[in-house]
Structure formats: structure tokens, C-alpha cells
Length: 564
Image (cartoon, rainbow, N blue to C red; front, side, top):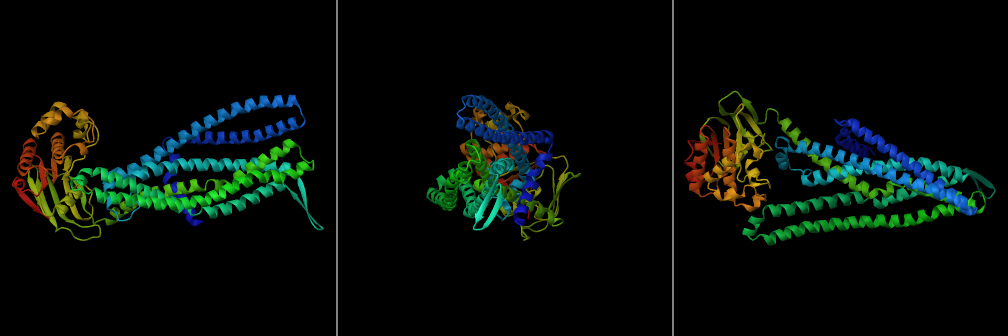
């Protein structure tokens, strides 16, 4: 029970503040309206049983006038039911999308800020895998099913209270005789309904218990399969060049076989549930008539009251059967909630890890200095292993410095400057108000127009098209000018050389004061790489340039080396 409570507490701690958000008045108004409409639905259901009783009494009495009256009442019920159901659906869906939007924005904001989306990939635990599925699908299920299940539970509680009262009144007083012992029982139909539902719920829970773990396994394997497909798509050219299709085919089939195994496990769980629900539905259909008919045969109730008692019994059993009826949905919902909670816990774990480093981390500050300074900086691994010597260095504006070390450590130094690698010690001071620009081995080119992709992360309005065309000519990509308005997946369409040239164009357009070149021109011929670095220095003469490269020709461009 404590585990269950902790689960719900964690979920409400994550998602509950939605009702205290900036639109709380509208949210609460919609919630109260939804509750009111649900109450009206129950009142309508109660009235329908009363209408049924009146109709069958009129039929039993062969009263045509009574039947006509009930036909008119039916039209009013018809109109009321449509109106209440339609408004209820609109309000419910507004609440659903509102909660999902709020939680999605909250999770994305925590995931995407300060490079956490990258840093979380460095964690060893697996509660952060497939963030796309957790954000897009699991949040949807967690919020939509939470409201759907809460609403159906509230509806069933109202239905239980309403129809238990009706059934109690119709049941009257029945005397059970056991030899010489007579036991009077009031509301016997109510007690039968409760006993039947409790037994069915316990047995149904036992039959459906494996569904939670089976559903979690299925969702995880499905997400892993999607991830593998996306991974192959992102690296399709490299795979095609080295003829890795057979390996990738086997990898995909292995991933899909895991889905089949989890599917079989889930099917077994479904079979158990279906065996129970099939028998349960047949019993629920026949039992109320069998237990209520003796009073009708004895003349204690009319035909209308018999029909009303049967419907009240069925409604009451349906309400009491909420746990059984929603077992599969609860399992799916809980699995998705746990995946979202696991993802947020991983982000919190990352935050704590970085916070716990305290002095034992690399601090990056903007300072009132004119140079980029490294004060006692040492790079370390996540487990504390030393990766570099202590660096005390100053790089002045306009200097060209080569990072003379393993490219891996050089890349970590760049990440440290960007605030993405806190593991280590020392302090990095960046001149306040001066822009930094990082050029990775392959620039990110969003699937928008080529003009927008080049301008990223700024909007295309920030740059003049004539200026962009000029820069494309300078880097030898004049042929791309007529494609500036074309939308495409540029990371797949353009060669590595073209993409690296566009990364250079982006740097020239943004005109930063500090540029960090991480093997960002290595796809070019050696002489062309040196030429592009000289172009960068010519266009941005006051910019400090730190470079990681393996080309001897390009290394000659630099004035000095920084050893790690």
C-alpha cells in the first residue's frame, strides 16, 4: 500500500501543480463543470430506470395512453442525453489537452535547458532512454488516462450511491429460512450485488495482475525498435558505404524479436483477462434477473419494478466492477506515468550530480576581462578520473590557438567552455558580453528552407539574403544559392563537405568574438581547410579562434598550441 501511495504522491507532485498554474481559474471552472455534467449524467441514468419501470408497468396494464406518455418523455430524455453528452465531451477534451500541454511544456523545459538534453545521455542508468516516446506518447497517456480513469471512478461512485438506494427500496425485506431458523434480510439484492462484485474483483485482479509488467515491457521494446529505426535512418549513408545492411538487418530483427517476446507475454496476460471478462459478462447479464424474479413471481413487485431492479442491479455491479473493468487501462496508464517519472528522476539525478560536485567542478563565468582565461582547469571523467593536466592559460582576442592533444580531450574542453562538461576543477573566464560560437564536426541543419538552416539558431530575418549569398560564394558553395528557398532534410541531402562549409557560413554571419572549431572543416581537402580558416580570420580579425584539427597544413595557420 505504501508503494502505491508513493506512486500517486510522486505523480501528483509532478502533474498536480497544473491546477495551480496561471490559468487555474479556467481550469477549475472546467473541472467543476465536468463534475456537474457527470452528476447530470447519473441523474439521467436514474431517471431512465424510472422511465423503464413506468413503461413496462403501462405495458403490463395494457395502457396505450401510458405508453404514449412515456414516448413523449423518451423524446425529452433523447434531447437531454445528447446535450449533456456533447457538452461533457467538449469540456473533458479541453481539460485533457490543457493538462497534456502544461506537462509537456514542463518536461521539455527541464530537458532542453542548459544542455541537459545532451548531458543526460552521459548517465549510465536507463530511465532516460527514448525521450521522444516519453514526451510524445507517455505524457499523453499519463494525462489523458488520468482524467479518463478519474472521471469513470467518480461516475461509478455516483452510480453506486444512486442505484444502491433504488435497489435497496425495491428489495424490501426477505426472510431466509434455515430449518427452524429464520433470518430477515433488508435490501438483499444490494448485498448480493456487493458480494458478487467483491468476489469478481478479487478474482479479476489476480487474473490481470501480470498485465502491468507485460505492458511496461511491450512499451519499452516498441520504443527501442523505433529508436533503432531512426538511428539507421540518421546514418543511412555511412551504413550504405560500408555495406552494413546485413548487420543492421539483424539488429532490427533482434529488436523486433524482443517486441514479439513482449507481445507474447502481453497476449498471455490478455488471455487471462479475457477468460475472466467473458464469463463475468455472461454472469452479470443473467444473475440480476435470477435473483430478482422470485419477488415478481410472488407478486411483491410489478413487471416495471422487476425491470428497474434488474437495471439498478446491473448499474450497481458495473460501478463496483470499476477496478476489474479498468485493469488494462490502469496498467497502461501506470506504465506511462512511471516512464515519465523515471525520465524526470533522471533529470533530477543529473541536477543533483552536478550540484553535488560543488567546488569539484569546472566553473564557467563571464568576467570583466579581455581574454579567455583558464585558471587551474583540469578535465576529469564522470567517475573522477583525471583526463588532462592542470591548465593555466590565457588566450587573447584575435589569437589562433591549436588544441594540441587527443581530440577527445579537446572536445571535452570545448564542452566545458560551453557549460556542458562540469566534471573537473578550476575556473574558465569568458569576456562578458562577447559571443561564443562552437563549430562541431557536423553542423545541425534543421529540415527547413536552406536559408533558415544556415541562419539557425537565429531567424532568417536577422540576415540579409544578399549577405548569405556572398558568404556562400566565399566558401565555394555558389551552386547552393538557387536552393536557399527550398525545404529539405539537408543533413541527408548535402555532402559532409557542403555541410561543413555551411557551418562556416553560419559562423561568418553570426560574427562571434570567440570561435571553437572542433574538426569542423576536416572533410575538406587539407589546402581548402587552411584556406577556410584564413577566410575566417580575415572576415573576423578580432575573433579568438581555438581549433581541433589533424591536418598539418591547417595546423600551420595557428600562432601557438595549447597542450592539455
